Image (cartoon, rainbow, N blue to C red; front, side, top):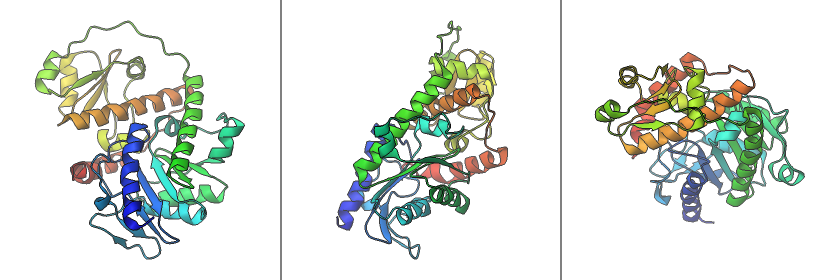
Length: 328
């Protein structure tokens, strides 16, 4: 492929991954190899629905330079590490898929694949934690690769997988997600429908017209656990150091919403609001994943979480930087 074809492939793949619920908003990243040292990669902090081939930079892994009007993803060095480790692979995706992210918060001793699935996905390992875009995160991935990983779960973060081409990489991510969903469903078990608690959204909708109530049985179950400390990077970015839980009282909910964009309402679910509908949609997707992660770790009797400092730092950077670039 020439440069234009590579760039178009990356841009088009972003929309495919959104449809498959493997990425959302500006989270995750995608690249396609050009040669031994160059690859096209999705631009930093830009929504997948807006990326065109003109936006996609070509990154030079040898000297760190790039061609194009936009900066390459902050995770470019992880992509470079994947290409260096797998010279036969030509496509890399970093996803934020729900169930594999949840399984990455535990251990892999009970993760099972069919022989056919194992042949495609290969060896799966968990990488140690590092903040997004840092050398520490890259080192964790490289260490996992050197330990024999073909597919890497980045704890608190997501998945990175390489393929011979785009379809191969996506297939690996989908098979991994299906296997992880089987494990999560097994551990969580059947979530019973709770008796509905009367809760009015009238005053909340008056104050925040875009506000929504998430009242699926999973969100109700999450609300019964109580205040949620972020376990995954993207939640920390959008919510901050904690997702508060309050009693089903409109005044209490409004008080929290004056300071942050989401609040758990005990026995009711979660109320979310934002400046526009797109941000509300993003919050809903994020909180569905957060619920999967917390219910899974609760079943494991684990209280794994990100540090308050890391959460505060990521929230600050997100608000000052990436949230303003989503429509760029």
